[in-house]
Image (cartoon, rainbow, N blue to C red; front, side):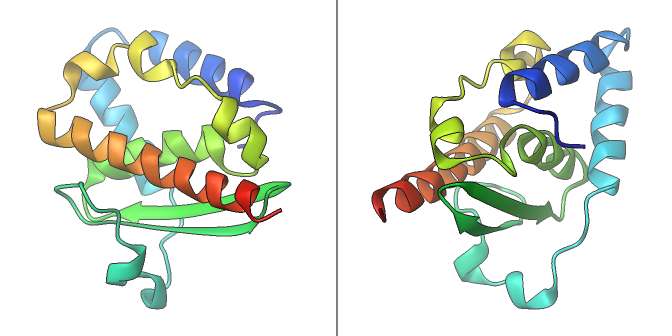
Length: 142
């Protein structure tokens, strides 16, 4: 599911998470989202595609140009895969300009920031940084 804009994607995520009463239900939803991710082919599960800074193993690829960047990623952790799914929903299929201009507020708005362990929060920041670095590199390549 790729909504029309990053803002619409973030609002949809906020709306979905508001349906759940407590964090055990929200974590289960995250796990379910992660299970729906398409696995990465083995050739992408290499050190060069690994996101550094994540305690779990996370691999991410980026294809396309500044007009449309397509991200794929997967983790060996169920909850982290759910986080990956949310990030891909907001960022994948966007222009480099859209990615760099997006204020990623849904993490705070759904209360996720308060419910992540410090290591998971660091990993989430590392994934966001990697996505933004790809966008910056594509934009700089003009």
